[in-house]
Image 1 (cartoon, helix red, strand yellow):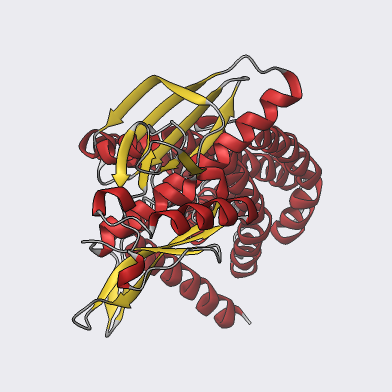
Image 2 (tube, rainbow, N blue to C red):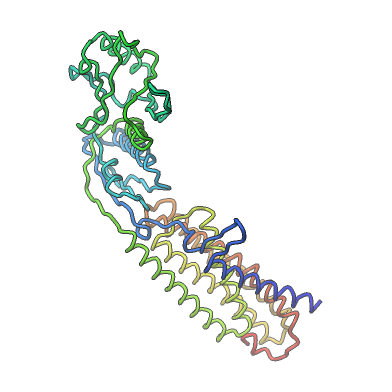
Length: 427
């Protein structure tokens, strides 16, 4: 039995050491490759760099009408941002009339600002400056491929219209196909006062016919990027209110990465100091706590990677706070064990009794903090939400490692020890 426990203990230490190595250096076996943990974690705006924009609605609407306008505006902005290919953007309504956007990792911040800033209504205008349809009549816009005159597959933009838009577009194109001059058959697509496309309706002599089925195709000298950008702008439709830019901030990735590296070093130093303190105070249990905290750190980081949680500077603070909670749990447990040892109980009995007596205190203290983290995550925005989610993950993992891993390791060590010298166990 003793040999079996020794093997188990050695295997646990080896696995944890291997996990630390992989997290720090990464690993590649054949085609399988696992990057360093710090390179796999998704970074928030202040760490990855990107765009921070605050927009304010220019409207006199109030109450429920204002709330609906802001929700609709937020949804349209979300569509526009999605077209940029940015993963997990932060778009939230602040106060009554403001919307905050955080676009972490935006490769071209100015492009993002230009696209978001197109706040006027989208309109389709005929050669006589009459508005044919607006963005609200477009139910969908997408990129497709079709053959051109020489049989080559080229990108085009497809449109789908609602019932009203179908009728008005059909009537207009039915009139335009009769015009002989090209300039008299153009439908201008205008956004923010600028023409973003000027497709030509085919003349009836060239086979043109009214577009009255609610489906249209815009052809032109597109590549896939320009076609996709046009489709995104059209699909986003019109904003129900005009937005003015209140705050714009471009955060460079070099500054963010420097803060990230500094935070990692600070966290590593904090862990080493904690390990030293625990070992000096509790001897063998302190070593076990250090091993348990290492497991806690690995689990927390990889859970964040798997769940795609974005790490922010407040989030790093949340992790450090949860490390403190994990240490607190171990301290409570070890103090109860020490009390049992000083009463003359055996090591095995002291370990079991100490954990049982400390369990309620550990759970109570962490549950209250967990509730606070949940409230911050649910009601908070931006950095506050990031702090809340990392704190929640850290607390849950810290409780599990303290109760399960620390306890299991202590019981294994207790089964291997015949020593009567309880000072090696903090007593």
